[in-house]
Amino acid sequence: MTETTQPEQTQALPATIHPAASTEIEVAGFGTRSGFELMQRMAKMLAASALVPKEFQNNIPNTVIALEMAQRIGASPLAVMQNLYVVHGKPSWSSTFIIAALNNTGKFSPLRFRITREDKPIEVITSITAYEKGEKVSKTIKETILNKTCIAYAIEKATGEVLESPPVSLEMAVLEGWYSKLGSKWKTMDELMLRYRTATLFGRLYAPEVLMGMQTTEEVIDITPPPQPEGGNGSGAGRGGGGMDNLKAFLGDADPAPTPPEETELPLAAEEQKEEGPSANLLDTRTPPAADEEPFSKPAAEEGSPPASGETQQHEGENNSQGLEPKYSDAFIVAEEAIKEANTKAELMRRCKAYVEDNAALTIEERAELEKVKSARFQALGTK
Image (cartoon, rainbow, N blue to C red; front, side, top):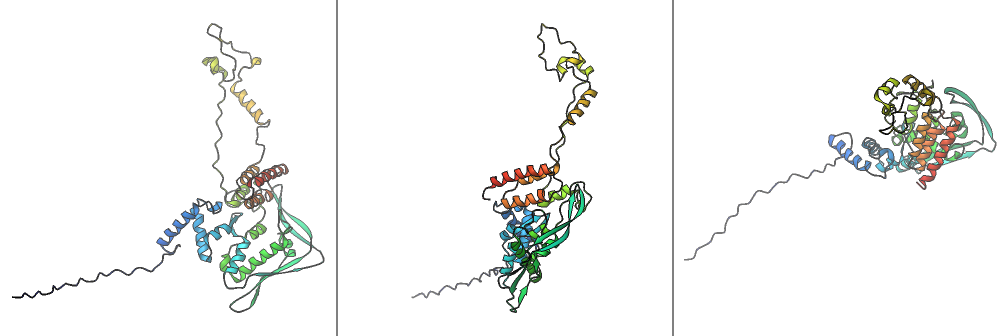
């Protein structure tokens, strides 16, 4: 008898349903909690790098702001950090970054410049504001120049229209006070400054999303009035203190915590020293007598006995009036520290302008001494 084997019926298992993989990409930013946390992680990594500028090293808040700005204008975060400067307490772009950003928008042809030069010199008279002996004064300046006028232009790709910036001339620079400022580059590199300024005006008119309402470094230096010396009566004494506070804010340097004065123990009074014995005499430098010798007798006043407390205070006051006062002013000390802490030659030049050239609180002797400090630091930086 043959047995017929029935094939086993296999029960089909239900197919496992996997949830569809999420295709949503998290974007760093302030819009969501996860996006903000992602931006903080990115900022922490960048702030730990030694290749970013000093203002962003170990400074996560500054780096987060730079990331947000880079995201808004569609630029590289590192490019933004390398071209964002703090001048007179204000963030500003470098002019070269503005030109590169305009060329990278894709809206225009590469930016070009047209300069016209006059053959005959002209004389321009204007008034500028300065500080003399702590007082705000208006000075009349007369400059003789060979005038030059520059216009930045590009072709708009969407319409083919030629777009031009407002003209900027050396005569305008003199009238606005840019030309005659201490350390001005308008006298030595006039055509470069003309191109920088017209490029800025072009971007402000036709691509304001690139500048984001910020000024360039050269604009801030030209437009910001000179700092008011400490104790002056002008507008330089802004929020938070006098002119020295504003001067410290130029490059974001914070004042160190003040060091409390050391307490000086005054010599004991004559009566107390007599009771405690010769060893209590803080001014007695004689060798103590041996055990078999007579102890010191009370010295006479002409032999150098310790003065009474009232006399001690009088002598200390006389010493302070005889040259123990600080040799240099607070402005000099602040400027010297700022120069010595500069890490690149470009940063050194910016600090020298902010802390020395534009600081009317310094004396002639202090400026000469700071010039030596600047030269030494310039040589120490080498090729940086």
